[in-house]
Image 1 (tube, rainbow, N blue to C red):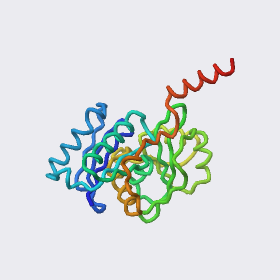
Image 2: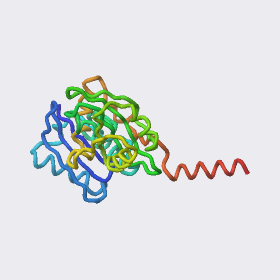
Image 3: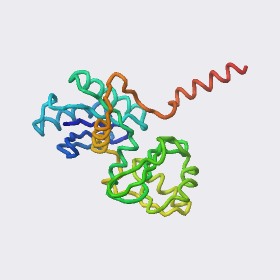
Image 4: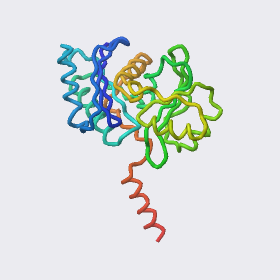
Length: 237
């Protein structure tokens, strides 16, 4: 089964084509250009260069969050559009779980981190053993101070991955924790991990319902938070 994977949850954008755990093709860009401008040309170019028609794709996979609200919306909308056009399933994948795939060769604790602002990171923690990883907590937005306290009793080695990895690494090392930052070529989230996670989800019985696919923001946007604060003040006046 050929799976077309999309990753637009942060500054970088990437696409990949996976079949039975093998990477047939991939493209990655981290130049600051908007995903609405780059995503579909990357999909078209990758498939054209691989001489694989869209009709050969059996499923779409997309990082559905957490991450950039705008980026996630672009990726999920593109995945739903492709799935409807091709009449194939679309599978939403946790951005954090997908980035953990970068380090499945490293036995130890994988701390996934994306900058959530306000001294917080979007985070999930996994334990890896013999190329298999186990999730230790749900996706969440957590204060760096709380993450540091939680990791005090965590067995080493502890690896940090994600576009918020450097932020987390600097804070955790300042707190006296011994952690290892993934190298640059493995640090950022990529569509390859999204495709591999979707492949496992489909094998486990996920139907890939494109109509039900929605972003997972984990928390309200700034505009929504400000609106709620205004409404709260109005009701107490």
